[in-house]
Image (cartoon, rainbow, N blue to C red; front, side, top):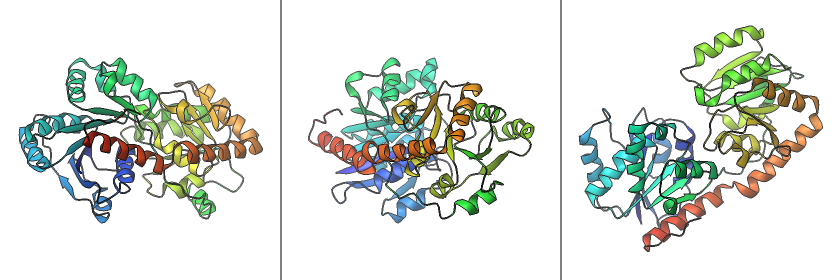
Length: 362
């Protein structure tokens, strides 16, 4: 079965990392896989190529680039199924799929896409989604969001993200903590994500003014300058680590992982924290309560609430025994509910069903 995946960008991000995990594990030669992206530097492209997956940069020039549709349609010839990821890929992929005469189309929704609330963009997005045989949502929260935005309920299905099992590794913990300006006795709160409004880092910085410990912020984005300015009031208790590719090691350097998102389709980084048995403090945004079990694997607090964040962080810091128990419970939950094998098997079953003309919803 020849499947062509199309994604808007192939730079490092949650959707892109998910796609890398999926495509490198789908059984071959049963599935002949091809991948294309529309814009960006394509930082992850070499990793797909190293796994034997051909990658094409379609070099989208602007939002009305009709030539890209023609190039996509040419690339889609002979394809059994097109699978798109993210808004621009959904729109251009649906148009090219029709031009190429491909029989099946799948669209994955990786977030509670705020553009769907906009009249014009929402209309285009819904048209593209309605052209799909299946719309895969990465959480029940995303599925509800898409249903509320008018997407056909009979085409919506849920397949949560999964993460490869890796044993916790604290071998670089002390070295990294020193690099982050933290001593052996410091309580270190860490967060990872794009420095953008969605991720809510400003509330976490505000929370740290009300509780002990040091904060490490991993990521880059348009809000970095304003977040650095806000952090100046904390007397060097906040360290901006920039982009890091060694997520597993960095997560092990934290005593607590915090995710203060204002909205969140899933939060793949939560699974990274659970893999390292880190307790979690996160907001009750989107799918987060599906991943973090309040009072068991961490604490879940209201979004946009620095005081509640601070109280939860302080509670973890004050009870190391309970914190360790929460971290271990989180790792157990990862292995039972969010394994990479479970995710890949779900996608393979969907593809097989669509190939035979059916495709049961899960």
